[in-house]
Every structure is written in structure tokens, then in C-alpha cells.
Image 1 (cartoon, one colour):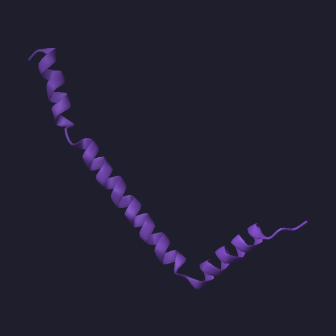
Image 2 (cartoon, rainbow, N blue to C red; image 1 turned 45 degrees about the horizontal axis):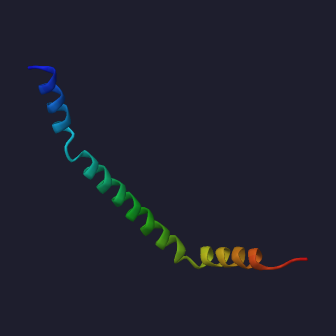
Image 3 (cartoon, rainbow, N blue to C red; image 1 turned 90 degrees about the vertical axis):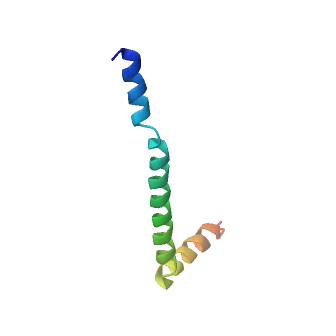
Amino acid sequence: MTSIDISTMESDSESGAATAEYAIATMAAVGFAGLLVVIMRSDEVRQILTDLVRSALTFTG
């Protein structure tokens, strides 16, 4: 084999690797979004966030 053949083989062996990485990252993002939805449905968490937003928007002078 020549060096050209080896470099061709190396690039072919990684063909589709980026697509698989994108698929894994997308699945991780979907899982994280699902976890956030479950957490946000909690009344306790919702109240904490509501209080946080209200205190941030309240003008104290």
C-alpha cells in the first residue's frame, strides 16, 4: 500500500461519524429537555421561579 491508499482508508473508516455524533447529541438534548419538563411541572419549582421573576421585576428605589 502507498501512503495515498492509507489516507483514503482512514477517511473512509470515519465516514458517517459526524452524523452519529449529531444523533447522540440530539438524543441527549431531547432527554435533557424532557427532564426539564418534568421538573417544571412541579408546583414547588414553579413557585420558586415565579417568586424569582417577580423579585427581579420589582422596582425597589
